[in-house]
Image 1: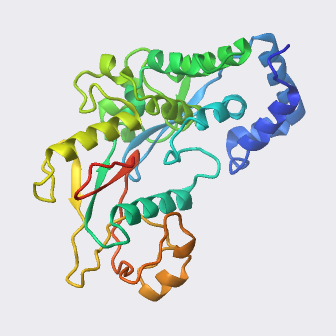
Image 2 (image 1 turned 90 degrees about the horizontal axis):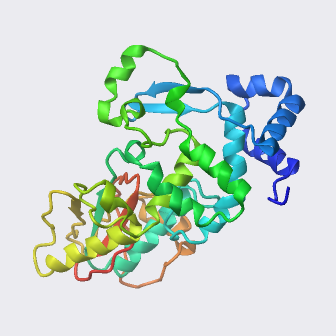
Image 3 (image 1 turned 180 degrees about the horizontal axis):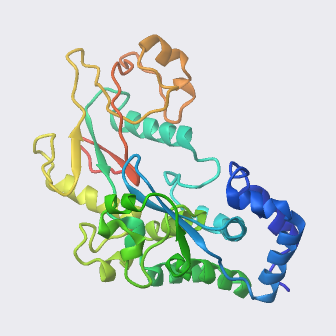
Length: 341
């Protein structure tokens, strides 16, 4: 087989998959006969007989009720196998602010990127700026797999890996699953947020590495993929982070010269107000390393953050507010239409 697949890649995917998962029931069952299970999975992959097995469905209540789907451990190994092989070619095309499930781009990286954007737009805390908090409503449940597939197929040239990607993408866990937990918790999840209520070919199971990766691939496309399938969406006809940034820039341009608080019910604008001491109180999401104490702020590694520039007029922020944006954070200066998303 000339696909580049080997048993060594499968073993590497197994080691990646078992991180922080070794105490789960499915992982323990798989490791009871590890060699035999890995060889069996290898034979199914090379022989073209591999099929995903039963999934586990349960409901979490924090931070809000959400339906979660957990694939079997052997299926998660296949997810890591595919991800390890094809993710690199997609990550090179992602914008630097895309952090979800990308090695080296964790919470601290995201905080540093946001910190650099704010310092750039406020010119070292010397002028007010705005930030935008937003999310895509019912994103994972509403994803059309038929839209995602062409974006994947055009970048996966080898037929074997392309077939594995199609098998994982189009697998519907609703055909074979086991619900665990209190059935009453399902009533806490709104019907339009349930994968069980999604139409055919729609919805990615929350909880799988492959689902997060496929969602990133879809969001990175600035073309009209969202247009044909979601004509009533506020993002219509623009999809992807670059497209949303262009739309926000147009909104900012139309409101130029108006009050700093931009009035738009579809977007949650909030103004960063200037303090009496002419030192702006920046409302931003930050890591614990960025302390609210001025002395600790100077000693806490701010100099090493991207975009840091010393200034005699720059004063550290004295108050931080949390910002939770699960999809993107756009920082826009009051007198410009430059958008970083």
